[in-house]
Length: 395
Image (cartoon, rainbow, N blue to C red; front, side):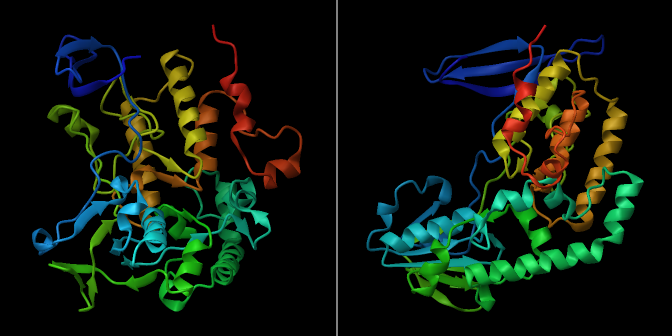
């Protein structure tokens, strides 16, 4: 392990006569740089890296206050006595609006569209994971593409039941969070949770009710010297404008040739099993191009899967077969999943099926609850169910 070391650039060593591997340009904090050759490269830089996304808005340079991003909002004391406007509708934006409401003179959340909040306990009784991390919960989601014909038929036959199930869930969440009309999403919850998902407490709800946080649906039009103007003409005074607008994926560490072979789409980077780029040999992404509701477990399974690939225990399909697999996944996601720049990486509650795919590839049983059929159907899955896969003896 090399600490305080950065990879500045990755170039291919592939040649026409069969040469493979990569040349890495490596730098240290001292300013010293050098190049080294490696046979295999694993990118494990995380799903949300750098740089943070702050959109350019007219008049931004004229604003006399502070413009920052949720990624750099580490101390809420900076809001003391300040008027704060938070831009965004995701979990980070909501958390920032709550923090600003506790410390600032005022806190206003400006969002384009509302998203469904998800409580930690359904009906204030049942832990969230019991309704979603189980095979029953997964069955109620939009049908996964990688199912048998019989399973597809059953999903189609029960689609009215699944539709009714989610309308009941929406009603329950509206009551739990006491959502006013302007904070009630229009996107069905079974689709909206695939935009990121917001497992939150009632703090935001209560602070909006008590007037400590204001929530305004709209979009930013321009900055003024002392605040912002929204597209509907609303003017908001601000000392701090805080963007909770996510991150921009940057593959600049790879040289231009490698970036072209990644074949990145407008909705993200599609990889076989969210790990392997079909057109690039000897490179993999672990924990960098996938998002689920249990990322720690997902990344662990990815790492174990890749280890077995490198050990020769898991045989990869041909590049052409992997490309065909990704075409099916693209078509499936693009028919129903909300369009985002990271849609390729989004698994969220479909993590059950994704984990099953990885486990089956490794030659292990994807049914991890033993002989207890009811537990297999209704009990939530967790890391403990996969313990034996991580503690197996190696050759």
